[in-house]
Amino acid sequence: MINNIQTIRDLLKFPSENSFYFLEIIKRRKENPEMERGQKLIKDFYVYSFEEYDELVPKVVALCEEHNARAYFRLNLRNAKAVALRYNVAVGTALLNESYKALPKLYASTVGGTQSDPDKTWVIDLDNEEALPEFYTPMLNFIGSLRENAVVALIPTLNGLHIIARPFNRMEFAKIYPNVDIHKDNPTIMYAPAQIVTLVPTAVWSGDFYD
Image (cartoon, rainbow, N blue to C red):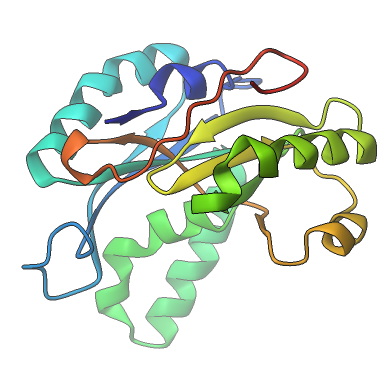
């Protein structure tokens, strides 16, 4: 299985009562060929504290196992007030456009598009051969040269790795790694059942480098 539950918990912080994280459980046709659509949302969660996170873990694991689905977690904080204000505008727009069917999904959509983290992180997505140490170790060193203490975590995915890093000079990075994707607010994988795991690289976080 892919189990990044503890790794993700170690990255969380809750600076105010309005701070929360966004978690989604997604079932994909890639692992479930009987599906008609490419993916289906099983359930989403909003996490306001460590206690809530810990209480959700068994539910998340059970839902992933039951539906052969993946749990995705956005590591950038959301702010309940900022989300509420944007949600209010989104609802008004939907009503004006008579898009009534869109209403049930509007809050989750607004949460997904509204990050308010003062110490935000990016997701650098490495797949297959890119996830081998001989490729990503020099990359980690280069990122460190662009910003001190930029890399905060290395998270195994189904096909490789996610490097979680604080923002750095993307233009300089692209000169060396033009084909590597950097996502400013994409989710990383929290959990996936054993039956859908394909490749998990072996890597150990040591604080300054990866082995």
